Image (cartoon, rainbow, N blue to C red; front, side, top):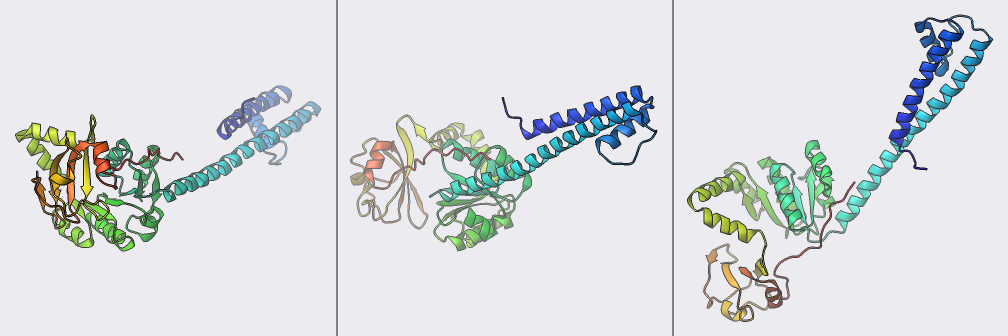
Length: 345
């Protein structure tokens, strides 16, 4: 026999209460000749065992009927109370276990991304992360944002993103990147400050709404500062002036293109690329296209020459075969995180 859920038990108890109330009214009217109001009152006092006494003297049949109503009423009330208690206890346990499971999943993450702010911009970021199978944790204190994140089964920390406690719970010491994507420029700036204080090496991307906030956020320690409004304006202008260029850029940015991938390679001591020319480094990758080179100073060279000598700290943007690029360096050219299924609570 299928076990009833607490809500179904509560519904059954409510229906039984209505039935016993209706039976009591009809019984008192038929046995004792009470009016509808008197019968309803007598039934309520009997079922609830209020003990206010009888409205009119009862005969033997009426007293026997009252005993039955009292016994059945007590059983129904106890049944309803147990359903209510079960709802409360199971709800608390489910919530507690759900929080513990989520915290366990977050504690197991390494090199993940922390998304601070789940507004319109944050939701788009989360959607992109899911498509790319990137592990991430959302930090937000807005009840509406929290509810949306829960409905989409994302890993979530409820709290102020500018507080040490929330970021530590999100695993900032182990995280690869933090994105301050809230609607408030001042809130994002404080988040960047807190993040850099807890983990000076974490890569931080900040969102600003006002151009004047860019300088303050860079001073706070942000590695990249993004203005959605500025980017949106540029994209609209580019769509009108050079739509093919924009389509090509979007195609590159979406990830795989057959066997080709868009990868970012860092010239580090472990990579063995420092001190060599680009042409020499990519002899084993004949199909690779070097799109750009970023120097440690931040300067970017588009389509660098093959004779360019690479230095420590340089970053290369390359379009090429994934297997060839991974064989080129001991560090994977493109991160391929394990598939992450958002925690259901």
